[in-house]
Image (cartoon, rainbow, N blue to C red; front, side):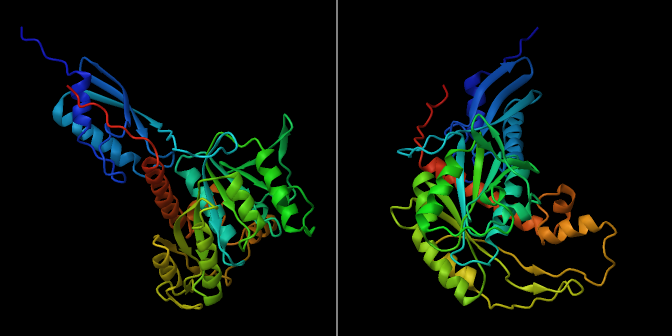
Length: 380
């Protein structure tokens, strides 16, 4: 009876080396994304290390690996375990334990929807499978407790460290949770910076794959404090098409390029790009002008991640029977991030899902390019 040759581990690696990561443009074996290869009778198993916890290419990479192995070894059952690759950054500075990639959501100008973008981004990264925390660093105008329906709630304290409030899978923390609603914080810049530093260091965050930070407007002490406390951070710039918003966004984007700040600007989000009446979904009215987001992205050589429209509500319909729920919806505005069913039905959800996927891929590429990657020896 003729014996059937079982493939070797090196042969399996050779087959998997034909699969290329679409973002990093290198094969999986070169990138050390394949490990724990086991070969038995009619069975091949291995661990596939993804480049990011919120990997939008997870299904594509799995299909490509299965196709490559089934082509080389027909009849073999393929088992793939997914894990996440931890990149070691060269020369990176220390940051609080447990924090992964930090994404600062900036605007320069207030009132352009920065807090809304931060909340939608955090929720979408969590939906992609990542462990996400959201820090509301807008000391003077904290909006996140309202967006997440956490008004009058306080973070817990464990072992003398604060514990963020878990809301729909996102760990949310805001200074607005520590003061009475409506109480103004009349602080000078250094006081605000010190309060924020304490908020970051005296909190049990982790482990966290992504920390999204809702930054205050401007380019002041808080920005400098966070840049020093959370070095090698990433940033998303939010603007509207209005000339005043664009002027302030340019200053904030230029701040990211300062050598002392160590902030990697990854893209632009243009909010309030147009208005669409609910009864006329094919119509667009450009209330604040056009082209600001594109021009800012071009000036700083980063992508325009998306344009978010203004979507009107159907106010002619009957009010909701549950007055408490109606009040919560009014508080939450147009972004129901705290309620899974409402979030899934929100017209804004696909926009933020696209932003989260694009940023996850961009961060993975940046982390890989700044890491020590040495090519594995060729399989024998």
